Length: 388
Ligand code: GAL
Image: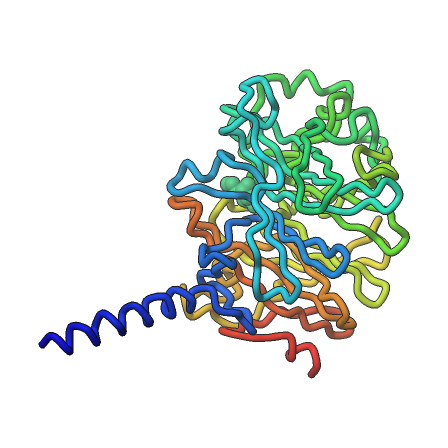
């Protein structure tokens, strides 16, 4: 008995650390829809995220969620992780912290979603934009936040929040939309659902927000080959997407934007450029509940954009959801893989609004065809898919 007990103690002394190590072992593949441990063995906490490549290192920024429904508000800020292979991620800490100051726009308890970071070569600054809802105002503020850092992982300093493009008409404005400025008093006190309905299109929401700035919710950033950067966001009560040129330092607006997919309620925009054309994934507008993904293409970022339909194919075996519900997910970013020509990864979130921290990630390769692209479910995959 004594010997057996000693053997047991010896085995546990050796095996327990080995088991713990297994949680942090190096990964060599993606496992969409499953818990994704970081270098400490903790599930990655970077929801609604985006990935930036800088000097050979990938930086994944996303919403740091806490447990429970409380996690749908920002109690910590934007979390950053780093990687050189995209499979293994190291916790780089909180890149942008929410403020303890109740007077700050990003005070603890605000809603801070879909943070994205881009690097400005001229100023050598890292610029973060995010969707911001002021504390205790639900989703009514519909603002964009801007933060700045000298180093990629932060810390980022909050600069300001704003309603974009105040006092500017879109490049594709109509005379009728401009003339509606005289009718905006009719909208005083009127509220909209923020989701698809037949009422919203009857009201001149663009004109209503002309003076104080357009609404900006789900968003993304895109830097083109010429260094120009664009802010893409769900505007006009989520009914219409805007693509807006940023200033040369990426910290404010250049004063030029276009309205897209009028009254089609596209959300969760994610963009890439492939073979000289612009390709976009979006979702429909159903809050935290999944819906069917959408895809579109354009020869110029200013449009015209053409809708291509749902790019998803296959079934997520973990929740049994297929393309009609985007495997249970919603798009957040398209990530170009460094050093591999024409290799792009579509990133989605499977939200868990009842216990926000438990949201998982779905990363899948994009397959381009002549005039469309598809995103096929894979239980497990690695970069070799891009070699075929
Ligand atoms: C989704 C949006 C998320 C979050 C959520 C809140 O449509 O994509 O980022 O805002 O609504 O209900």
